[in-house]
Amino acid sequence: MKIGIIGLGLIGGSLGLDLTRQGYNVIGISRQLTTCNLAIKKRIVTDATVDFSILAETELIFICTPIEAILSTIKSIIQYLPRKTIITDVGSVKGAIVYKATELWGNFVGSHPMAGTINQGIEAAEFDLFKNAPCVITPVKNTSTDAIHKVTQIWRSLGCKMYESTPEIHDQAVAWISHLPVMISANLINSCLNNDNQEVIELAQNLASSGFKDTSRVGGGNVELGLMMAQYNRKQLLVTLKEYQENLSKIIENIEQKKWNKLTEILTKTQQERAKFL
Ligand code: NAP
Image (cartoon, rainbow, N blue to C red; front, side, top):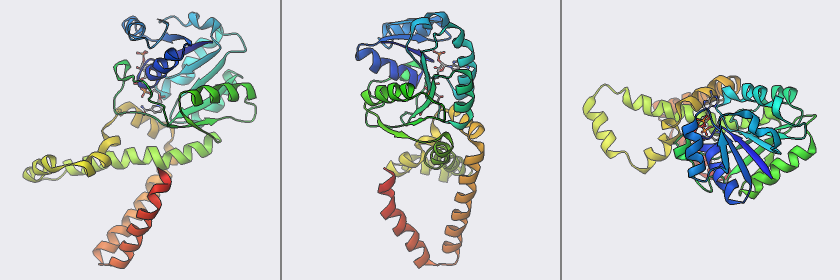
């Protein structure tokens, strides 16, 4: 099977490594020739070019560009494709993409692998990034069952645990477990830096260990991705941020008023419930 990957960064590159290893004929598209050459050299793809017309005979195309470029990329490639070609994307937001993409190309189905590292670009590509990772597929009313089936199968073959939801439910769920954590984690680092005693900051930086490493990781990652989560999932992210703010106010109140029983209740509940998210 001939598979196209557009955008050879962390996700597109990692996808290419796994698919090429599985024996697929993988065609990569980058905006830069140097990236194409590197992708061929690293066996991320079988062949790569900057020219969309090479996609003419592909059966399945993964769009792995930043969110803002997904729809314009679909507009640019469809003139080269036979109707049976299936297009999917890997964007972290689905509502803003899936309906418009389906209007542009009937054989489209959205997907979102929940895998990543703090790195970006082709150099960040790694084998087995998707192994044991959850992946959501987000069909809508008219999505072809063949597209759902093929895209599900291929993610599953990379080791993903597959889920299906509407774009709306997807965006609400990822606002809680992905987009809100990025903002909280970024705010944690930012708040630490705003301490006006330089001696405290320096000692904190020297003492920071596994707890800070875990809680700050997603706040220290890809800036454009964080910004696009906020821009393209703005409504749902604001819902979660406001609810988070309310809950934080309750925690502050409990500490100010020494309501230790209330604080214990919260910490006990979170201790018991955390495992359900992991
Ligand atoms: P990335 O490492 O920055 O890769 C994105 C690639 O897209 C770039 O390397 C570049 O490749 C290409 N690109 C950049 N700007 C472009 C533009 N304006 N038009 C066309 N192509 C452009 O980012 P990533 O982490 O792989 O993210 C890619 C997609 O995966 C995003 O839609 C993101 O929402 C989704 N995603 C990310 C994660 C994560 O944790 N990082 C997880 C799940 C899903 P070329 O130089 O080859 O053109």
